[in-house]
Length: 118
Image (cartoon, rainbow, N blue to C red; front, side, top):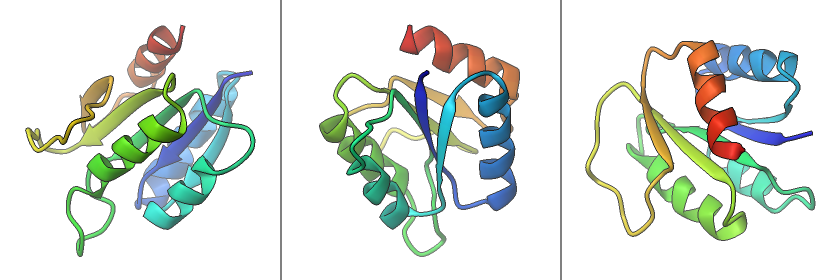
């Protein structure tokens, strides 16, 4: 079973995405912030994919980019998808495998992640 980490500060978005991917056979872990996501990355069972929102709090815009970099170090082969309501060109040395504009259609997001994860 493929393992997915979903990181989004919006509880409704995070939960609905998680339920959808679980119904499609993924094992899902949810994180509401950077701290929870980093803790999940230290878990013994690494993830096969991560979906992360670009902005996880109003105080620290663009936190998702740092999480993409941390996730690439923690799980080099994982598929990394960044969600955003706006485009960005503020990537560091590590880029996501895909960037998806909000609002997200869950069937299309699932297909993208599944196709990338192989």
